[in-house]
Image 1 (cartoon, rainbow over the protein chains, first blue to last red):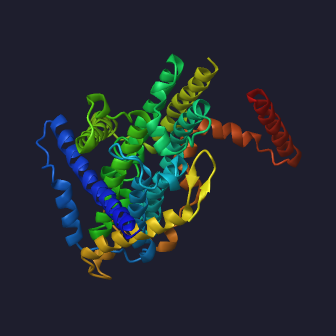
Image 2: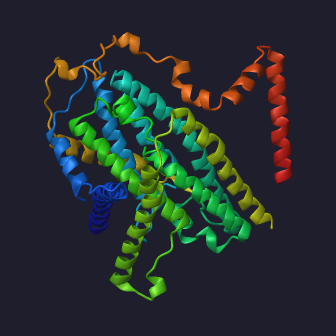
Image 3: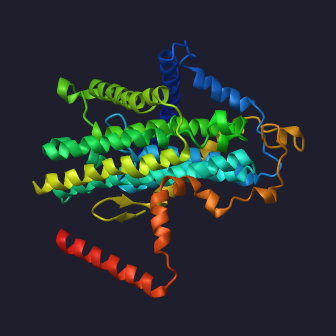
Length: 331
Length: 112
């Protein structure tokens, strides 16, 4: 029993620390690749680690009229919520640590918590810029949640028609039974559309260009983060890094869960290592196409343009994907 | 600690709450590593507003219509039509509910 608890704590610590470290590494890769695409040298890969250390060494200013406990609490809640998400996602070919205690519905809710925490922190700062940023964050959340939920529920529903006895909202079940193996041509096109919708939702979830409207440094000076500094900003920075890993891991689990070890007839520890390495590459591919390329290639949208984009074309693509999955079942 | 298992998925609030509190403790420990001090009641603690004068806190309340501005602007065509349907007459609202329920029941009947 003691060994079981010890192993659980060890695994939990690995997920927590690994998630944060990986998030910072991917942030470094993101900045380096984005710089190279813009013909700049860019910062070293370890720059995000320096950023966290430096932020922790800076003064932690709380504005005069801010509601201090909300202002200070928001970054803690943001980091804790997004880190807890990692325990419900399959990572590196391993089943989720707490997969039997939470499913896709919980993941949808936990994805929203960091955005809500940032919004609360923004309003609590008593700053006009932060207030405008918080309003924009709320509109963004209301815009991209709809296509996100359509895509996730459509996939679970289609799997329920194939495996009626399975817990289809379980991430373990979804990752172990990729829909590509079951659906016909109509369903495959539907899945491509749903994947496309989620790839567009990803930079919005992560507040990256062209959807960094709530922060918009050149317009509202960082928006809801304008008044944050020091250790509070360090926690938001870490939460952003972890969320990048979590969002990419979710897409990998739903659309690219395949391992490499069994295709290479590997077994034992080597198989585990190969699958972990393959998972890290898949996460990098998702981050590359949904974050890095997009943020280099596009300019920031206005808030009404972003809301329109998610409510009309992206929701439309998700709905067409859903209808194609329904037709695939009928066919 | 038995949670809910619907057959479609699982949810155990106690496990998540314990996990969340554990990670909050870790986040607070990371936070405790950082610098705590700052110069209170100085220019440093005034909000940044590009050199403009800081408004009084009571002037910072956000009006409801401003809160959703981006959404209303993005879907202005929908909102214009939806506003026109709000006649304020109770029987109109009942008619909408009955018509909507009828459509839902037809869809449910077709889907069975």
